[in-house]
Amino acid sequence: MDWEMPMFQNKAFRKAVQYLFHLDELNGKMMYNAYYRMVSAFTGTEYENRDLVPYGFNPRKAREHLTAAGFKKRGEDGILVRDDGTRAALTLSYGSKGLERHMTVVKQTFQRFGVELNLRLLEPGTNFRNTLEREYEMTIIGWTTGLFPAPDPYFSSVYTESKNNNNTWAFG
Image (cartoon, rainbow, N blue to C red; front, side):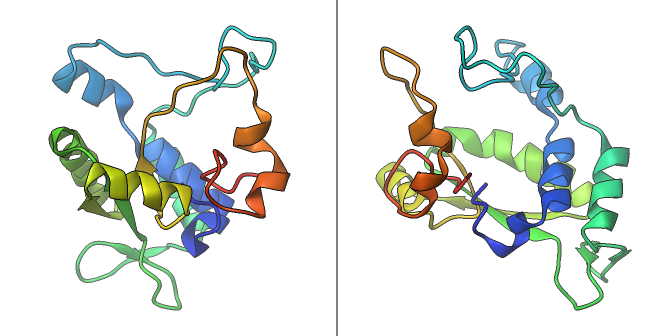
């Protein structure tokens, strides 16, 4: 999520999106339970936050947060809207055709609960460039780490002032 995008500046909306992501269903039905949810970006290091509790799939909590974000009624197409006409809609960019079947399931789940998720398949290099330049709303990319854990490039406020760095979500 690019926190600079208007929709994601609303913390309640960000939480709702987290609660609508059904990792257990994707993992169980499409990935043969080969994956697990990481809770901390630096698991196993001194930077790991062991107090973090992951968001699980919870439509009721998602709805509470969507309501708190101002999305109280559904439009004619079933997508939630605010009183000012803003739709609960976002675009997910990704750079691998192989992810399309997974993201289609995510899209269908979001749609069921009133959030429109537009899927945007890009050439991998374009998706990576757009991520570095923060030209996305939501994206899927893979990161590797250096030999030693270094959270600053990913989370320090100093990196929100510029683009083309590892703080691709503008977290500060």
